[in-house]
Image (cartoon, rainbow, N blue to C red; front, side, top):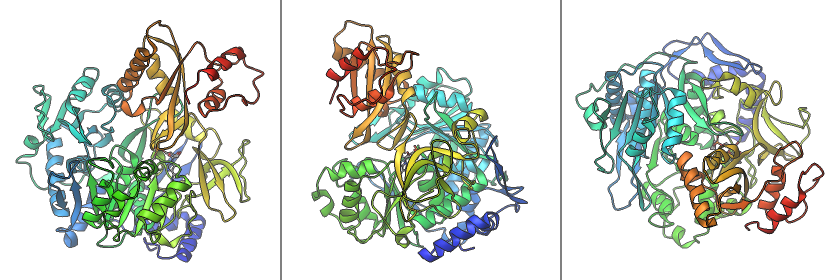
Length: 631
Ligand code: WT7
């Protein structure tokens, strides 16, 4: 089986093959990789418990596949061009050979600090090459990485460290983001006051912040890698051994640790990368995500490196020092495939064409979108002004849980339709279910998006709580993986994602549970009760609207500021509400359930049509909320 699909006809036949003979199909893909021991059984699965195993009996190390395997023929090829936050600072790059040595040195350093196969290592880092080295060093020695986005607060970091019982954390003294510096090390120090599992902290000197170092616990990155051997044997991992944990929000409770395993994740990230982006030898790929999210894991680190690609990694933000920054970087490195989020496109679209027109974007061949539905206006702007109408837009739908891209065009081989993610990749079997859980077979319909057959990079469990995995993803509709999204399938079979159907909101491509934000608000002593909903936001896709019942006679601006502080403190500034309405009560049913449907409508600007309100305990409250709503 060829890894690379070269035409739409080939896509159709490969798709057919992947559904009729999935095991043979994936065997054919897996054979392109280096295994220490070949697998005995391609797939065993059931979606009830659930239990999903790919390539059982096989042994591998993913870093051997993305480093050692390439060295004979691409040791001097650049793996990453690193572009700093400030364009006046110097950039740097790292070749495959250098990356190999850096990874081996840090692997040996981790071992010297007592890290063994199966131990969890937390990574809380800026967008620098050492972050990638850290990820790969864990994978090399079989430690399980758990990356926490550096925009999360120390409380959120502590929750994740404790859930994973991480033994070590790799961080930096601080980071640069736009015009700001963030002091990461003191956030770590604060988090560690409530974590017992961490034995050591490795700190990268990034901004010369001169942080405080705790004796016997803290070591400098540059000191600990000094004098380490340039080689480190790659640990033999079973296909189903854990590769990483990544925390993500759901409709209830604290974020859960999505678990991905070595074999299947390797196969699928490489396969999807090469096909969706139609990456060719010598191309320069750039994914603008942060490594703290799944997009960074799969399409900055694993997919591109497994494919022997050259990529760009960027420390900064799209609008610093000005709104031309992305396009300047595309021009500078002659980027061929560019992958970003609709929220960035909308923000840059609002800045007009002048910043775009200053740069030569003729190297671009494929431009991608990920993280949230892309509205038609943004799609058209992107296609016309960035892709110059010659680059296909790949609108890639997937999730932290799916590990890799599920629905998307394949470069210029697939038909495109603005706002439609498109067709499933080979091996992916999506279905739409009606509210009774029955599959809808015809086209031109809407339903709950589920997947009915396993694919290699799907989540295996939620860390430390398998029951939660079952309840969240496999219990709503028996026999199916439930995505949490609603979707429409058009007459040609293309999928269009409508959005989440659960209490998850997507703010600038960042995923939050409304309950999680409410919990953060409720820690504030002024708050008695709160309800958080999403509302349409021009740039962010969804904004956060919080209704808060308060117990205080203080000035309302002071209270609002302190509520925002509570959210920043518990989760991070990225989750702070855009609008806060202080209310005297929430609309509830007689049985005490908050009628969120009504609150959502009010946040959208609706004044009166709230549907069936017969179960409402106190209709008066609704009128009050409407008359004070923030538009
Ligand atoms: C949710 C997953 C995996 C990428 C980063 C987000 C939404 C993702 C699209 C798209 C419409 C999309 C869905 C999904 N989403 N991509 N192309 N079109 N919606 O990962 O944080 O796990 O969020 O993002 O609602 O369920 P995530």
